[in-house]
Length: 357
Image 1 (cartoon, rainbow, N blue to C red):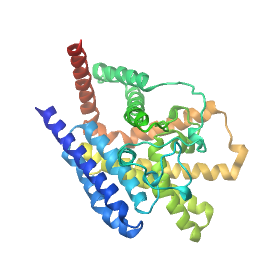
Image 2: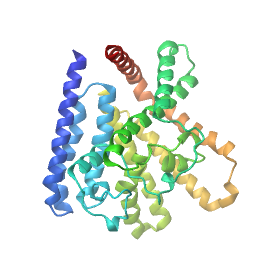
Image 3: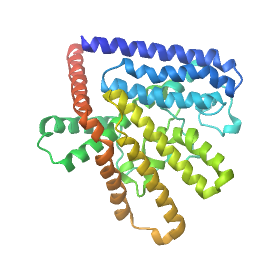
């Protein structure tokens, strides 16, 4: 009964998203870009902050709040001013902002708005073809996730804290890639386009700048770059100069990321914010800013072998994650609920497979 209730709620949420995006395509697109168009889009942005509250499962709530409340709202915000992917003509690659044209079709508009996707652009550093150290695909990540979930379910209470941290970090990495990878798998063939992969082997990062800027959760990185970092940097450079403007833009992007994660955590926990996850991202922003400043000051003198920088980078992210990112989720048993939901999904899949046979 509870599953049926969640399914009905999810169907209602999807219907609202479709209708609201139809409004943005057929009506808002007729409004001149700028403040007036933003005024017409504001009710949709407010609506998207309410939608996740109608869901109760961790994954449906988490995905809706991440995809719609955060990413879709950011795209619509850019769209208000004639920028971003919703103003990009679909030609097989993303053109320079100055060459943007209107959306070719309603379907393209809806898919680009609702899913965390980005057209692959050969001029972007993280989209250039390169051989991967661990060429994991969607199915191998799903297998790894299943193994990690089984370990947590059977031995969770017996495992040491450090082992649990590694498992949760790996599971988070795989699940984010799976959720966004499925979006690519669904939308890519429909649009006939090659899309940017969700991440670029973040476990191989050799610096915090490398991890957050070029490897981890590239859709969020791209969104923050265009909605927070670039506007902050451009505006503040008039008063602070290039270096300080870059630092301020970095801190603004990480701070907004922290606040958005705090909001997502509220949706899945339904408890008052503890601000731990916000501090986690603020700390990452401070660390990236210091790292960039040291690189500029010391240049080649700071260059260390990847065998040193990789474990230091990944260890720092995981260690600070253990202190401030995971505690709100563990304290409110979101981890246990997530595992139970995944097990239920797996059992339903097996039952369906047996029924088909």
